[in-house]
Length: 283
Image 1 (cartoon, rainbow, N blue to C red):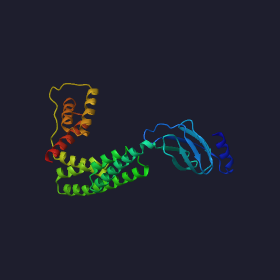
Image 2: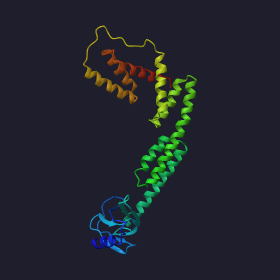
Image 3: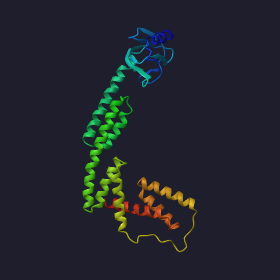
């Protein structure tokens, strides 16, 4: 190991200082460390055997061809590009006994990838999202994962745009319940779609705006409750509202206003809750 480093350093030019690089060798399936691996730098004609899974060497910036050999493992041939921006490498070796299992695993992955492709073509985004989660559990390359997510985002955008057009046409025809349904479908897939989120609030306001005089009056002798308890109740009601438990939220907002009729945030969300229940009932 020391002789190898010394020779490599001597080969470095004055303007190409050696770079300390870290290398890790591990099993391709279990990711367990693999000690006692014979490392050969082919283009340097030098080799050594590791004692641990990790090893360190100093190399000038260049491309190096490595051969890794260990008992029970297939020989691994790799090229690495050493630079100041690339100074850490991981080598995964395959046990000869695991090769058949890895082949079956790759076949299964290909089936999932084909199913994902079909789901995206049909714009079955919920199914596509499920399949992406499955594929991510496999040891795919970064480029494959990037391609999958890019295809999903493109399909999601196309799907959202088509349903957004339908929802807007329904809203223009004052079919608010139907429009609400399509806006909600968009948010189910793309929770950050600002247009759909804004439209949902607008429909809420249109419905609640027609409910004039629908306010809660406090009882003549209403019971009292401390502010901390009301605040806790309000947070619980909001949680139910955003998790779409509108009946539970409705009960809590009414209870809050029974104790504190001046709680305007609770009154606002009470109206939103009533509006959404009304829309869902119509749908």
